[in-house]
Image 1 (cartoon, rainbow, N blue to C red):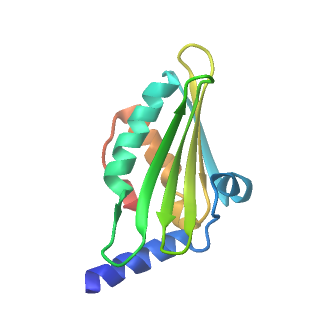
Image 2 (spheres, rainbow, N blue to C red):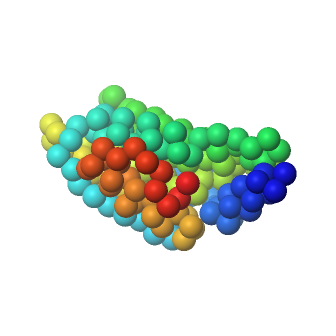
Image 3 (cartoon, rainbow, N blue to C red):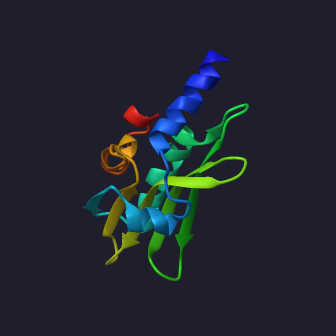
Length: 140
């Protein structure tokens, strides 16, 4: 029971009153981190989505469900990964990662975060992509 309450407190402290939409995170972000890499955008997506889901996706017994949702667009070289906290009555998005390919193998990654509790998402994403790191870092 203590662990469940501690988990709920942690989630709420990381989220605060985060926007309810992906675009809301982009528009009202308290911060963002941007990097360019020499990789195809689909490879970048794979390097982020796998550890992101392993680290963050799940649900508490009585608490909110944490979802890592990813979309890859093939008609344009773009992808996005949204971190969603889905409660019984509403959902919030504490962070969004935009992935945009330009050129045959160059990609820009922009990590938008809404609360200071997510300020490390940019450096964690950079480690996942550049180093092949699969750990969860300080956020999980």
